[in-house]
Amino acid sequence: MKEFSCETKIVMGRGALEALKQFSFQRLMVVSDPFFAKNGWAERVGKYSQSFAVFHKIVPDPTVTLVAEGTAELQKFQPDGIVAIGGGSAMDCAKAMTYFSGLDIPLVAVPTTSGSGSEVTDFAILTHDGVKHPLVDKKLRPCLAILEEELLTGLPNTLIADGGFDVISHALEAWVGSNANPFTDALALEAFCAAFQFLPRSFEGDTKVRLSVHTASCMAGLSFTQAGLGLCHAISHSLGGQFHIPHGRLNAILLPAVISYNAEAVGSRYAELSRRIGLGGISDAMALRNLKNALVRLRNQLRLPATLAEAGVSPGLLQEKMQSLISAACQDPCCKTNPLPVTAELVRQVLSEVAGRG
Image 1 (cartoon, helix red, strand yellow):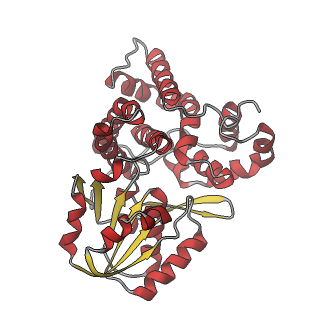
Image 2 (cartoon, one colour):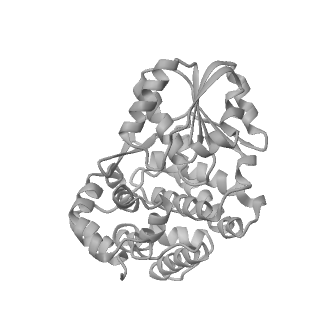
């Protein structure tokens, strides 16, 4: 038996932040990184309450220690709501803070980048001792996701590229996830098509398409939180914990290689996706090749690295960390929904293929 549910209400467009009025907050905790605390957006969110406090210590790859600090602040302030504004790190930290605080309060997510989909997922990614640990629980799913278009106009190219390939990888892994069903398939397909079509234009500065990419990110999140992810994310979490390379950038490096290995189990599914997005292919093998080539072309268009060496990880350092990377990847919950059983040897083969030359 499979199921699909969407407890998160989603509002989108310019002025979507006004949806916060429905709560009539008296005391609000706003969670953001220092950038949004300084540029006034955290305060704009806070003004939808009678009083507010801002926890603005969010950094990339939030640690368990940071979450503990934020949880203590949350319990001390005793708000009647919490709003996260920022990228995946801010949302993940706010979700974990709410979860561990024991407070029964509404959690609202306002994503400022188009990538993680955390605003609608059951996931929060926390780092401890150089290892990323996915926390998975339905209690982590926000009650409201606000896709505010005004936040997207000033996105830097690096965030568009890194986040965009995260959307692509979310949609693709959900498409072949072991818990996929017709509902997750529809969301994954639409998310992949929109991201594939609009990412290059967004990267080149077309702000008119950014809400479409933002929406695709949310749709991919809805899909993967229920269909599951896979080997690409398991290895990406492992590498990110060790080397602190942006998550989407790692996915861009890993995804074509992962597709090659997973094709042993779901080659026909990849071929179906390739044909449904217009890449074609008379045979499944040709359609699969067209899909991989299209991903490589998109990676090049977004000026993302093709190997770990190009991303700054020397082959020597990769080899030195190989065993710990393999161990962390194999223990990652994303392996459970990969279409092909994940073994240490499989992880080693993928890492070796994407290592590159120093």
